[in-house]
Image (cartoon, rainbow, N blue to C red):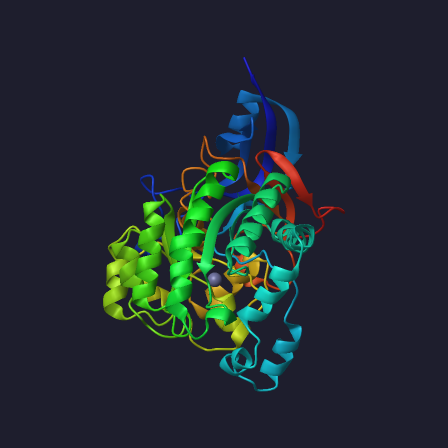
Length: 431
Ligand SMILES: [Zn+2]
């Protein structure tokens, strides 16, 4: 007797299930286990994966209300983007022109540009404008295959403006097909009004913002909420970072930390010591701290679009992190200054070339390990029974194409919680 289900995705030429390992991420050299199946199908019911297996087996077991024919193409889990600053107002295209003409990021900041310019635009924008501009970016992320997206605040840098950003993310989370993970990043930069007294701003974060964010969370947000700090010269030093993160832990917030983008300050070790869910950037991390991350539960998140966007040559030394046994994920870091990129496909293309990941490692770093980097490894990131039915039918036959090709969108159909939320349209075309 056949079981009736909502959806059967069938005629999959190559299916990457990208399994979790013992209920955790794919660590160290075990990264890149794609759990490949050929001539496969995925059974979906009530928004979740019911079964994966051979086409013939699933056809014999299930009768589907809707069938999607993948046309012999590649299917993977929906991509997970675990580090974005996707909510902001305005743009900084003129600064990009200055940078390309030879100005450094530091010179642009000194002239009033940089993060604080986006802070001005974001403070000035009303909630609807902020939501509309950010929604367009989330739409492009979804169209490129990202079905779960982390979103940070951090362009408000005052209590009301940070709360406005939280309101924007909550509205987008309710309206948008993608699932959004939420991170409070009041410690993104020292706002201009505190430039001569950074510790006074740290006190505002600890004494005013964190209680306000915790109160907001109790009323408006059901899921977990992360607190993040930009630990860097010119932003927050190690002691300030520790004080903010420990205060956030007191409110039950989980932790993320921007560390070692330009200067090593000890942030990676601090992230591991505090049990942070992730340590992000990790470009100039010293070897002893790489070992600490490798022995911790903290996921190492590399953001290759940022050095690419700045035309820098230093990238995360991911092979050393993998040698140390770390769980590695990759993300867009989508932001208006150093890297406005909405595509995890492009991140995989960069990761294979500049981080020297294999295409299989890059895909696992963009799916199951990225899910663990936001603490959602039990819900998304792999195609295993019980997980959310988030998957992408690609216009290509095999997974290496996702890294091999770049600059065009290879997603054909994006499915979120068992529902088609994007389709490229047209004929399925040639692969
Ligand atoms: Zn960032």
